[in-house]
Amino acid sequence: MKKLLFIFWRISKTDLRTASFALRHADRPRWFLPAIILLTLYFFAPFNLVLPLVGIVDDFVLVPLILHYLVKLLPAHVRAGAGTVAAPTR
Image 1 (cartoon, one colour):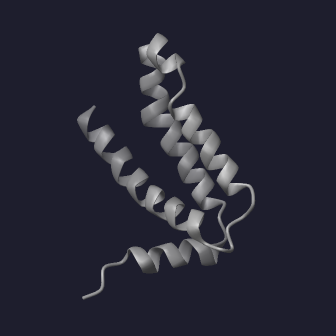
Image 2 (cartoon, rainbow, N blue to C red):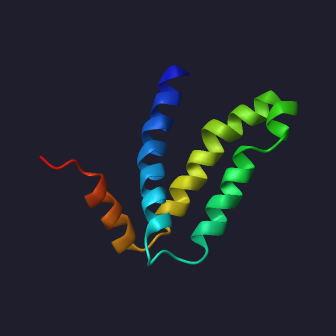
């Protein structure tokens, strides 16, 4: 279970970085901001507290997969710009 959480964290970390860059980018699609808002609301949904098992599956499986899919739908130049900004300069 610990390895699975680590894998999802590593994937989500780059997707979160790309999504935050895309939210500030001028050429982001119009649908991206409402999709991220809906995904955030879904992440904090109240049934996570009522049905804990469903909440765990949602938080650690479905939300990262949906985030990854949304990032993949971004235009290539927006995703590439996020990669160049995220890369450390030395």
